[in-house]
Amino acid sequence: MKTFAIYSLGCKVNSYESNAIGRMFEAYDYFQVDFKQQADVYVINTCTVTNTGDAKSRKVIRQAIKRNPQAIICVFGCYAQVSPHEISEIEGVDIILGTQYRHLIVDLVEQHHKGQQLVKVNDIFATDTFEEFAFISHTKNQRAYLKIQEGCNNFCTYCIIPYARGKMRSRSKESIIDEATKLVKAGYKEIVLTGIHTGGYGVDLINYSFDDLIVDILEEVKDLERLRISSIEINQVSDQLLELMKNEERLANHLHIPLQAGSDEILKLMKRQYNTKQYLDKIKLIRSKLPEIALTTDLIVGFPFETADLFDKSSEFVKECAFFEIHVFPYSKRKSTPAATMTNQVNEEIKKERVTKMMKLSNQGQRAYIKQFIGRQLKVIVEEFDQDTQLYCGHSENYIKVFFEGPCTIGTIVTVKLLENIFYPKGEVVSYEKA
Image 1: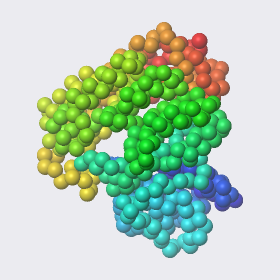
Image 2 (image 1 turned 120 degrees about the horizontal axis):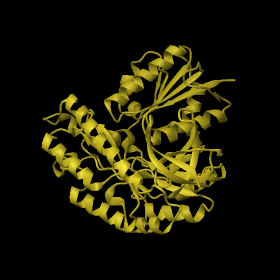
Image 3 (image 1 turned 120 degrees about the vertical axis):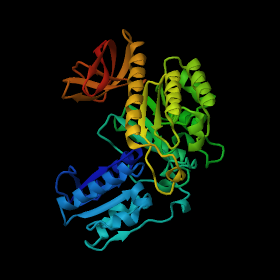
Image 4 (image 1 turned 60 degrees about the vertical axis):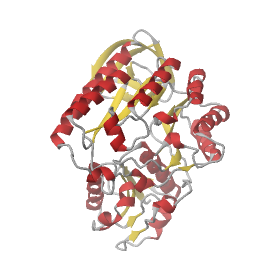
């Protein structure tokens, strides 16, 4: 039997696409093996969000070539889209696809002759339709990601993703409902709506919005137990969405709302579409309707022109927002983006210091948020048995990762009671007992 191995770098969208492609290979009677094993075909889904993403992509490609020089090496994804020439210079790479033609990947592998490199990367901005995959993205996790849109129209000055993914394209409602139904029938308790600009779903459709889609999923996928939004911009959190979250128990009480900077000066340089007052006003509105919601965010530190005073201002703003968790990233220059040519670039050591300081604020916010649930019950999807702690673990509806004693069945939803806030090596977590 022919074998294949997939390595996926970067975001949840990449993971979704890699899993779907894995199902495509299996339909052609390929058997999936671990990426560290010898395989007939290696598929690498690349990332280009940061310089580190580029470097990791090249490293993984070379590892695959070294593992089996006779294997077909197929590289696709964001880094392949924006820098196909860099990948083509790596001796041993056979197929380069970018972020298009992925539905053809198995056919191209089947037709390929070793040693004849194929580069199939076209202008991403000429694409105006959502690329469907033939198979749903089953994962080993108990939460299933469902991709609903592609691309981004924002062109923030630091971001290369629009150049890798193109303009926003929405998936059809019918296709989304169909996949959601199949995922629930396959046993998934929670579906996470994801995309490159998830809340932008519907901007290219007539009289159909992101909120409309959520209503239809909840109405038509009857047995779905939990629906979560992966990420949404602050100006896309509508009154209708908040009312839905308030009245619909199946909508997770959690929103991930990127901030990126906590000062108006840096937000303006980034070309973000809000200022700190607008952001904070919406956060206050959200909490007035959903007092116990978990709010998480993304933050970039060390952006050009970010002085010590502006970083302090950002830190104070983060405290005021009282996030449950902050994903902190040091600014990374991306070629062809306006921020890469800005003067007043911040020293790398200063960036590292600011990441550390901001992560301390994140940990403080996490502890403060968790503390209010001590002695209370939450519903948790049992996701796995953790070998390090010898406990079961999973996420609650408000995205608290909890550890608790069994016996439990993976994939079920259990009600657990928070006993105490403790620290495990994997991060700040919560100790529960089954109620």
